[in-house]
Image (cartoon, helix red, strand yellow):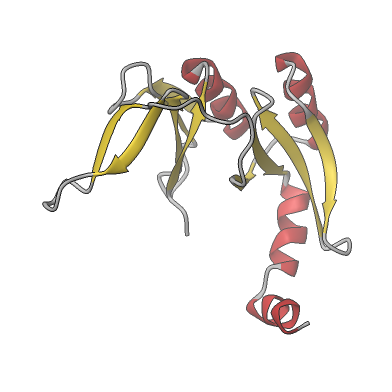
Length: 156
């Protein structure tokens, strides 16, 4: 189970507010970076997405309990990466797509695999892809995402 994750953004406050809207939660400032924000789902798992300024990086820390250090990056982040997350929302597909359109972010309903399940790709700031699953899509995903199905895919 994933409790929290972090993503980079050019406008962390705004991105956190939009993510909180998609979750029905709230956004709030968050350390360790200045101008970092978090979207809080308000669920029973403590789910949050930390949204860091895109010019900040997380690096390994020293050999003691503090395992990470935070600071300004020395490189420009690429527009795209291999990272993505699938996230539950209580909103309808139309509502998620409307939020994407309002923000000017790519939002597209997609089918995964051989019609295994559906998602809405919402490209945060047209850079970071998050898959949002409506309640109906969550049911499809959970019916598909079984250990048996994953073993069969791996064996094929």
